[in-house]
Length: 417
Image (cartoon, rainbow, N blue to C red):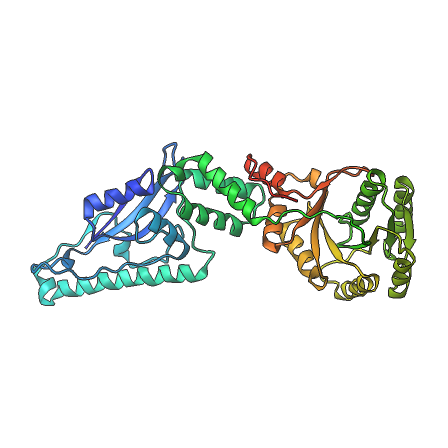
């Protein structure tokens, strides 16, 4: 049995070394990427390490071959298929018996191995070691997130950039896996081609933004979100945009009976933008207010902040929106909050019907990957992004292509509104 390690600039080159040295019957035990400038690799470029084995006794005198043990490795099988390897796993394996850790260890094929003597016992031990490796890799596969992809330098750098910009690791993994399936050869080493493919992939995943459209029929819109997310300001910005540019009849209804100074703020905004302000704190009140404004084209309902764990308040707001005949709810998310919090708010909003995502304070965000991840994970279309505190103004359509361009440094194919 021969067990050896090979280090090369990339996976194809390493696999060619294995074939040249051990032949086509070699079994790939493990692969990993060695980062540049560390104690294992002092060069300026990343390297790939491959551990391979060859069972000398597999080839008999009669010319017959014993089937090799070929473990698999979950998501990393994508890389193996791309490069022609049998397995590719970055995850450190559970330590096998000592012989598997040796570099260039050769167990000569003795006559005893053929006669069932001590050499035969050694062969059985080696085969048990290979089975142990196979079982270990199977456990890595079942753990899911523990298995990682063996990537080219260009793909690795792109993944690092995505993570640094706040894109969640699971989404980065999906992008990397997709690129490994779609690209091959030199394209996987080309940063521009990798970046262009990732941009197209993301553009296909993000829903087209859907801002508020006014037609002949009156539209009633509700706003839901945690305290401090910026709902009242967002409502005022939207109301100002319609009132000042298109002169539609706009009514703002505040149902916020919790926040100190909330009503005064709403009154100040209504005065600045010149729209009518109503108060309604119960189902009966809100139904009466909405019924009174039959000629209004747009009614915006601002409710108190509601955290993801406040089930009682969420149900109360659900009843308020139902009594008002709300047609769509804009889930307001503070872009400065993390991905997990954003998903909690989205999940809490599931009791409502048609939903949109409205991100606030986007101008203050340095790593917008959490926003992108939230949109892709939720599947909900974004509506608006607030980019400042000025009313009127400082609000944009929720075109996530701008966020993608900020993250990737390139503009993906644009989607229609």
